[in-house]
Image (cartoon, rainbow, N blue to C red; front, side):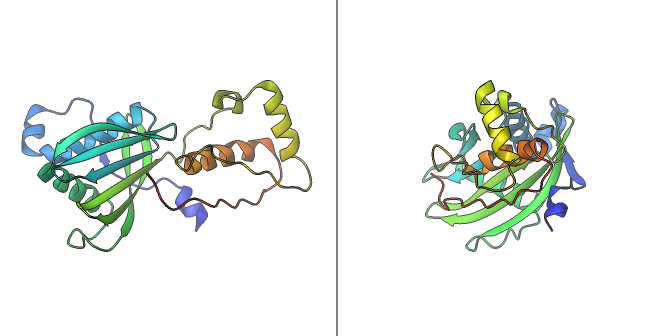
Amino acid sequence: MVEEKQKALEPVIETAAEPPEPETKEHPIAYIANSILDKAVSQRTSDIHIEPKETNTVVRFRIDGDLMEIFTLKKNTGTKLISRFKVLGGLDIAEKRKPQDGVFAAVIDNRTFNLRVASTSTTNGESVVIRLLEPYGKPKELKELGMTDKQVKTLTDLANRTSGLILWAAPNVTTPAIMDAKAYMRFSDLTRKSPKWFVPIFPFQR
């Protein structure tokens, strides 16, 4: 089951940096959705939050663990945008009260991504979170993640011990998923052994 999730799915859409003008007029919601995905990838976004407010809809990106407001849309446009992503993810667009989740693949900036879509009900309407996963993305070196040479050596030595426990803690509740992905990808290269991973994640996101 885990191996299946790590594989790239068959892409159902391919975004274009500059789609033909008639296409943007005939399919404005699809154009907005693709533009959001393009911008998310260019800004190294881990997940996209589309959140209805009382009078509008806000689109926020999680970048390096922090949620940043990127777009503000009309309430009606936001509702249609959420329906667009629900259709792509195979969710029931008629169901707006119960949480749902799905997945689809897309080619964005010539890179294939698996996108996990999760919807939930809020006081202002239905919201959606889209997590971007690049199954064939090359993992960064630990030094590229901000570690010093001494920290890399210490972590490598610990990872190659025959027994023990490494506790990798996030600085706040917004980063565990990102932290987990980075740690797993790099530890897989650091050690010949198959480590056991257990990742408790705080269930609420601000």
